[in-house]
Image (tube, rainbow, N blue to C red):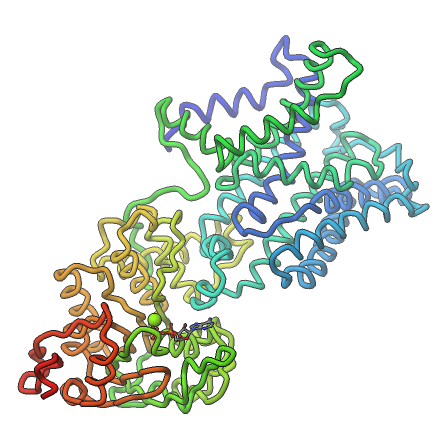
Length: 619
Ligand code: ADP
Ligand code: MG
């Protein structure tokens, strides 16, 4: 509701602009171009800015939209609206095909591929007879809506900006949803997979979405210009679109409009101004443009929109961006829970699991069993292979040998998202949160598999009931681990110890049968550790199983039912905490290579009577 006093007058001015006396027709044309460019750039904000997939080839999709309608309305005489549908269908098909093939490529290969397909389509348009070769197609009819012709610049202006505002709304909705969290997690790689996000699927989705926006822009362009030729769909334009996304700022949907407007206006002004300053003979536009670009990137690294938003904030409201801050979400229907196996049933069976990194055997034929309602500890010096074991179990790394069974089914070789779907969820030793996203959204990412709300529902805001349930669950888990007070803060603003706790809440949102925690207590203060231990103990009593890597021996000895000690990838000892504390081989391993994280402590109350694991106990 905030900023309404700005939004309503701004929309009114926007809608009435062409009819305000004294506004030059040139401005309307300029606004039309800004709208057309913004549509394409909006797709890039999602694709490149949020999803991290760089494309130089968006102009090719604009061309598909433009040529489809141009050819159908001139050669076939069909309605432009059919031209739109055909263009969208063709773009969808081509983008899907290209996406499935090229989005697997990592690093520089994807941008290179986008260059290639952009050039290929450009030459295709230029060489096909029925598309008029490099002369293109002229005589495209204007759009008609009922009996009303949209031939005039003013009426195209209304249509273009209406479409743009709808696209901004839909994209904003999309980012603020289950699918949006998955898309924002695309850059994180394996982390999101571990919560059931099918990264490949969402990459293709945003790729097709961005292509469709380009296609719509092309359709509008063709009917505004009433003629098409290959040149506006070449590589130069593809690069310019990307430029606009970078300059505008990829963190917000409005960055698309800011970037398109800034570049079009500056380019235009330079074209007017420079010849007056330096005479007509020298073409300094590109040089001046490049210098401006460097300045923007130097002083507004995240683009212009964050700067504009800050000015808006300063002018008196809270600036809105891609992800609005929220406090505790409203009450909603509870998510269904997975039934937990009866206490004592074998949940996880690790059978001679092995991992080799080149010549290094990081995990050397480790075997153990974990039963329902049990907290098992995996301990050992740094480099013992504990985190690698976690990665093998959770499907983050492929095994070199051995088998893993979860609830009776083999899961080794299964993708991480499939393992998460079965109820095996984890946290990471090196915190893997999305630092710019709120704590609440980070936690809700963990509940990804507990809703099926899709991209279309999200864009049209039809997912609100299911989204409210997800957010409520995230809030509940955050409150459970003591983070209720920081839900609407960016996760990156929390101290590292508390970020680990966010990871636990995120894992709990996945409704796990088995929870794998890699050093959950690292970086916590004494009271925080006590509180964490109480939460983990409560989870065990509710029937959840936990596998824990932890260096704080006090914490481990008090909490666990059963311990496995690893050293150099091999199992050293296994048993109840009291026995492990007294095991000479374990003492030898630890005391021989005593390092910072070994924290000998007095025997824990749970292990009272057993000799303490400290130098004196060895004798
Ligand atoms: P821990 O968690 O017990 O401290 P890790 O499982 O992280 O130990 O590492 C075990 C061994 O495997 C270490 O020697 C480490 O350097 C090595 N290692 C871990 N991950 C990789 C990797 N991706 N590539 C090569 N070596 C690795
Ligand atoms: Mg580790």
